[in-house]
Image 1 (cartoon, one colour):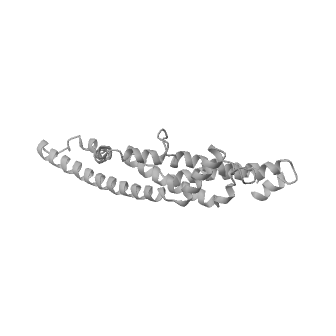
Image 2: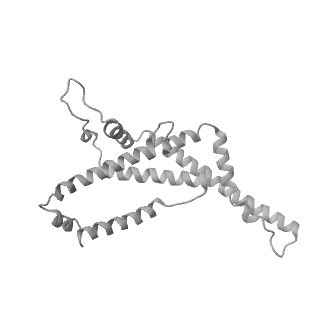
Length: 211
């Protein structure tokens, strides 16, 4: 695929644009990661800010825990056929409570997992690099000091790599998926979405490369 693209672009004006494409895509990804996961502005809907708001009052966690714990209650509303009403009610309540206990336990384990991951995220060196790149290059285009040679902030000094950016995104999406499950009861697998996007991306590049 790379050979096919190189053959098409080699010794053409498009080759120069191609050389800029990967860095630009990488910077765009970094900007989105900072906005979605790390922005601590009080108006932001970022993961960091959402988690901060969830800690504002213990009643917030308890609200979501109670809702998560009881989300299967309606499955036990109908009487059990072939049983007297009194016996049916006993078994319905037994099954309902069993589901609640399991859901409460799942919520508590998930909340602890997210809490631990958010502590790690707050001190993550890759997160610090991403925030610095966003602040000094994208948001403010920070210049050098007056007594230094004029020029923009050198992003190469961060030592941020594509592998770090991609791995960071995977970690944050896993946190979002877990927290989303606890708050909404909706489950989704980031890796499944990633595999779909990967297949679509490869198909696009193969088409462009003519392979």
